[in-house]
Length: 91
Image (cartoon, rainbow, N blue to C red; front, side):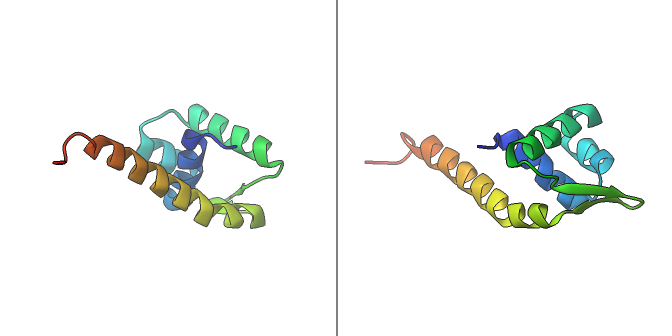
């Protein structure tokens, strides 16, 4: 299973269009971001992103990953918020 930081890295590149722009937005070195993408691609056994003259573009398998990755991260955020609320709510 993919690590959440790997999925965040993947989605950041998709959102920002390049490894450099995504690394800048996340506040991490490009090498760290690239390692996360390499690890994710290793897990799925295929490239998810292809570099071209304008930045990064999705491979067909990368396109398949987007919706599920976004849903998984949203679910994770919702879980954390529900747990944080426990004890703050009456009853």
